[in-house]
Image 1 (cartoon, each protein chain N blue to C red):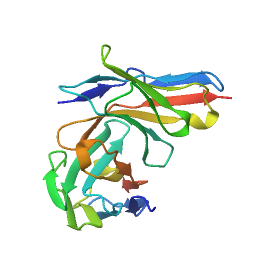
Image 2: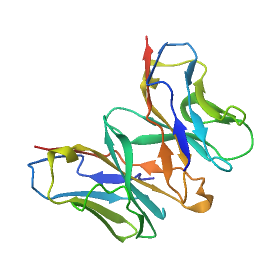
Image 3: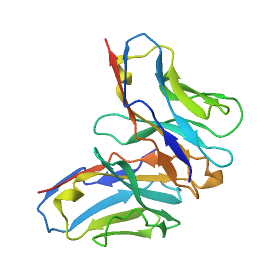
Length: 115
Length: 112
């Protein structure tokens, strides 16, 4: 089975540019999560969706960050304008909802560097 | 809110020796607990979970974890560590809805 697919794997861009990260969850999963991982702050949940609807975006750091899920097989995380402090590894994960005991399955992440 | 703590930033063991990675939890109600492993430049991979039932849970790659309600712990164990087990390990607990609350992670180094 295909896992969670993220693209691009690496992104290097200059400060002020728009960045779009993409995620394809595992087919049939109805929850999708976006995380950010840094050495200083560890793993942080940014936002999550259920059945394509955003449920909790309290982890989104600023209005510069936005996320969408137009359908069950695709989600984007956008940063506009980007800043050097946004440099991190961004992960997407998906899971089934049944009973709350299902693990989240992670993609391999996008390593973002803002110069 | 539910939370977990991993008291050790690093664990170092020799290959062939037992490996233990510690995790304690704080929850209201029954805990749903998980262990994940992260290899360099990869996402987190699910190892095992405790939902209910037997306190000893077996998972992937020869790992197991022991749920201890009185000590509020969920330690990850492997009887004989391999060099390839060197990685970053995360304990997690289900928070409200379907969010997971992760620990800070423990770096495991297994020396040959």
